[in-house]
Amino acid sequence: LDDISTATAVPLAEGLFTWPSDAPRLLGSRCGECGTMTFPTHYGCPRCSSGAMSTVELGTRGTVWTWTTQEFRPPPPYAGPDEFEPYHVGYVELPGELIVETYLTGYEDRHPTIGDAVELTIVAFSGPSAGGDDVVTYAFGPVDPAGTA
Amino acid sequence: MSADVAIVGVGLHPFGRHPAKSAIQMGAAATRAALADAGVKWTDIQFAYGGSYEVDNPDSIVNQLGLTGIPFTNVYNGCATAASVLTQATNTIRLGEYDIGIAIGMDKHVPGAFTSDPTLYSLPSWYGEAGLFLTPKFFAEKIQRYMHDHGISTTTLARVAAKNYRNGSLNPDAFRRTPLSVEDILSSPMVNHPLTQYMFCAPDEGAAAVVVCRADRARELTDTPVYLRASEVRTRRIGAFEVHSPSVPLEREDSPTVHVSRAAYERAGLGPEDVDVIQLQDTDAGAEVYHLAENGFCEHGEQEALVADGVTEIGGPMPVNTDGGLIANGEPIGASGLRQIYELVKQLRGQAGDRQVPGEPRVGYAQLYGAPGTAGVSIVSR
Image (cartoon, rainbow over all chains, first blue to last red; front, side, top):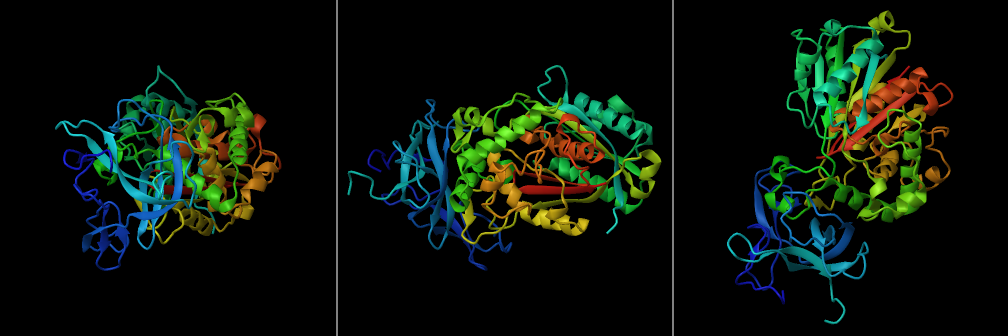
């Protein structure tokens, strides 16, 4: 979060993660009937059809479940930066919870490996928004990246 | 069980880029070809199903064919649209009210990855704004994990694509008819790691049509009927890793292809060992690899050796995508699955020309898969 102002940055979507916060958490849902978890929040349970979903804060550490690169600029409605740079994207398994799709950050000089230990971070997405604020989103990056141990 | 529905005519408007033609015009051309193949007139057709992604009303094809007043139902069901069209046409014959009808698929896509409004897929807007609402990315993520779990190499992906271009070069109707080497495919630009440009199919344009009739009337129309033994569609279950999924539960479930495949084998009374010609959804080379296992043709991981040994080549014991598949023909969504049926019928009749599978194949198998997690399987036999 070093480069991001929690005071002026706005999230890509409300309710996606706790914000503003110095220790943000992704927001998901847990079914009150069968315990199934979703990300993002859901109104209805995708397993048992119950409507008793409650919002929960998800864990911030997990492992890379799969990954790829995005080498071409996604077509609209993509709203990323004007200057497109290829990026890593994939799924991270949050132990005991679920597997979430996410940008994978901090892999500028290498590709991720399935099983890598990663943690949640908030990254600049694009900006400024229509309101003049920088837009931020969630990503996962290596735990204990080189140089900050 | 005995078959109750027969295919008595097939028609194709070649897939590719056709700037001067509308999807409807291509659909009408494929329909006329299928009618001629069956030896019947449009006025003989008692019902129709028309599938398309881009065309709101495929039934407006009647303006080109004749306004005969028949029930004509428009179908869109993602990448399984054409399988759904055929399933509906098959079931309509089974109901017993009609003797003969037609399934038509047509589409005309602009080049490049499919895009849409994620809220129309029960997804939040941010998923599209973040650039996550993309199918090529999903297929790369799925094969990346599959390669990790089952020891599949990138060389195998390239060999699958090379086979499909080679098969396409033998098919005068294919979109991409230039053979490409394994090296050409591996060195083409990376799109979504590990998938390169030439490992992907392209959304394109085209149409196909299939005339179906009561099996007990088929011999009145043709000496070479092909029987529809099964045509099934299934959607994803909770826990399957599917396209357009912001999250997946920890408890895994098989893909809809696995479930629809089992259902189709059961209805047909046949198993993978009975199949002589195979058409699989090769949105990308990786999809053909895991679809081989998901449809029961091998165990997970065996593809590495099967592909290297040429088992899936036209002359091999399990020929796959004999017309070049999606990789060589592209994907007009509404027509893609009927192109598969067209190819199987040609193969079972012995009319597939330079790409004919030797040994007089008797049973054909076609599988479709795509967004938002829908799969279809059809099984046909002589």
